[in-house]
Length: 112
Length: 112
DNA sequence: GTTACCAGTATCATAGAGTATACCAGTCAG
DNA sequence: CTGACTGGTATACTCTATGATACTGGTAAC
Image 1: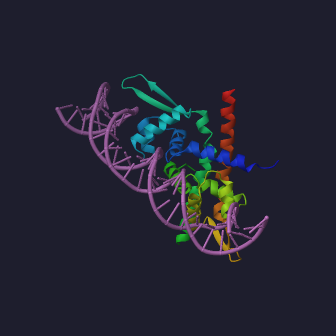
Image 2: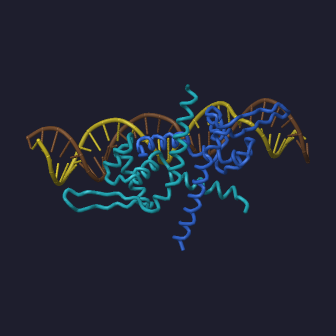
Image 3: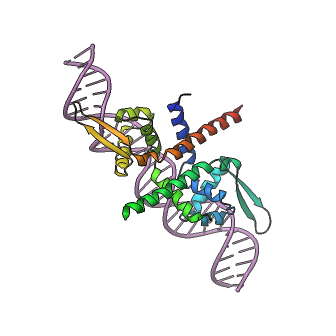
């Protein structure tokens, strides 16, 4: 079973493309942590603007990463739910959290 | 042992920041696949320009992700080597390759 | 009747990431 | 002598992802 480097590179680049910008992964993470309401998600990601979150959620809905439901009670409430597909990023996100954590430790150790 | 979501988010964002642009991960991957010479790396990543690779390698050298060695034979040859630190991206890259592969299968299945 | 929350939209401005293209000095093969 | 390879630099340009700011229409609390 030999490794096809071109195929691996292509897979890698597809993933990077899908992840895209600065906010996609944090939004996925927030949804997977149980946040459902727009403002709730917004508050869970310090620094994100309404505009960026709105844009991100729209794209994610088109890409079937998120399900948007409007509940017609008054006042209207809106819920965002991660799809199963969204959750397939779990491993990547976990590894990224681990790397970031180790990186921080590494930096701190080098400061001492 | 409770999870600290703010800390996780920070770790995640540190990692994303470190990964930065479009080419960092493909370059790391290429180096980890054994490519060492400038043009060799360049050819292994279709689409990358000389300028971007040069820029990327410089930054990576500053960040201790890569070791640049000039061999003074004639003509001068230059070698780039991934550091141990560079290799810590292994898990993330592996997960990304897996995700991209699964994604492709998923797309193809949905086309049929 | 003013303040604050929800779920966003609209408009404008900008940095910097990325692309395109040309070029350089040196070496080697034919 | 020509062309091609190496390891890059230099310049100019594009463009889009992100940020800043303001606003809307409805509800509800005080």
